[in-house]
Image 1 (cartoon, rainbow, N blue to C red):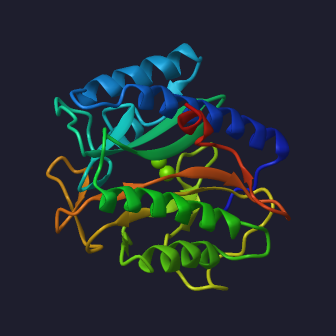
Image 2 (image 1 turned 90 degrees about the vertical axis):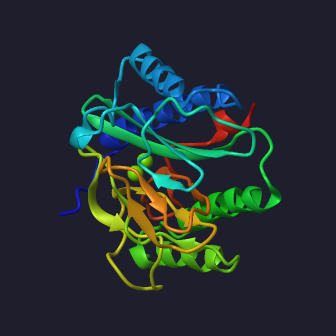
Length: 254
Ligand code: MG
Ligand code: MG
């Protein structure tokens, strides 16, 4: 069942979305060569709690941290650890909040210092594919229109789209219906209607699309060890263009 939100609920989701957005910016300020990823998790947890919310991921389905931190070939759900970031790495920071009974969920892949031109383009194209997906997130369109926009754009650069993990509805649960795949066919899938709130989150690999699950039961990496990028924003569907609840502006205005 797809839960349609009223404007009051959308405003609470916006509060969550903006807190997640500001948390990502706070974490981003500390990303640099030499930083241990566990420190980033502490920064996020403190920032979220200082703002009167709870980390949305901590304990969710048994997940043991406040952030998913996925370095290089890790696609998503990486654990914060004693790994020390180094120049040329990329790190996807996926963050959730729980506030007033609703969830926030957003992700951004940061370069660590200077990255190769090849990797820099992967980040740029993946983020652009998210915006292209958002452009299609309009009432009357279908879920497949979003996926098609993301897939056709990224595959045009020779990249591949992860299939096993997808975007999702969001509300009182972090993961609600419908699923929002980053691939698809125009005109196919569930119809978008006003009041739907969805997270769009392309996970795009530089190499092959195949992935494997780590022994910890969470982290997922590319089979070929090539890097993977991940960006996520939450939107509310309206009759006109999507109401984008979260934002990367706090990260990028520095
Ligand atoms: Mg997320
Ligand atoms: Mg998500």
